[in-house]
Image (cartoon, rainbow, N blue to C red; front, side, top):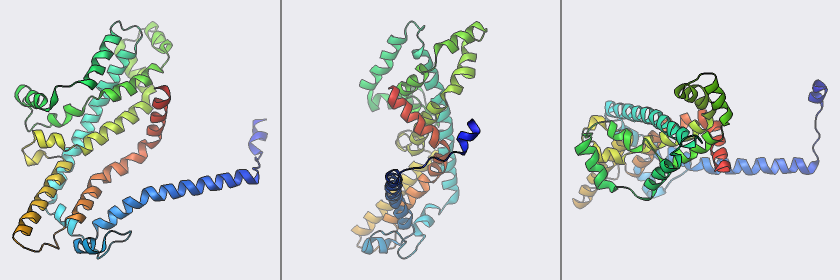
Length: 302
């Protein structure tokens, strides 16, 4: 019976076919509209500064030039080291953030935990009030002694209450009968969490993990506050520092009436965006299906 059903082809009416054609055309147009800015970004990064100033941006490079990339990679070891720092804090911060977020969500989602409401209010309270930047800076520098320490780039973004609420939604969807049956079989809390709970949270882990990874990868503010050693600069702050130096040189040159048309400025910004977003663009396709599913489930159940 199943084989016969598989061989049957469902015929669509002309109106249904027209509807599908319109949907595909609209989706294609929207996809191209989303892709065009990125194409212009890459094109502008390979255009000369003079062409951008006098002719604007285009889909194809105008007066092809690699001056912006040559300026960024003038000292390759600096860029490679900054990449290494960003990759390290992104991987370590995302892993630790997922671990603590998931463990906390598991605890406050358990119906048999006596103080789960009080603990949930404690986390929610921190979204309304915080100690402020000055107190946070003093705490990290004078009490934790994290000046020029990579932990200063990991700890501030490791735990987010919004992500905790999303993860709690995923954990709450897991039947409590699984936990109870595991306890009957003699499993402890850690074994239940790592062997049963975590494998059922792939969508949630991919969703929160992508949010955390993007936050760590794009962070430059914490590096500005806590890092003085250039060898510990992450990629974003290294590019930000390079941009500030370039703008300072341009300002000095303008005051001295020195022409700096060939000095990349606008093209440098575009090249920096390409260098910074490249790894994320490569990673995203691998977690896309989990990310879409996780956002959908979280929005429905939330």
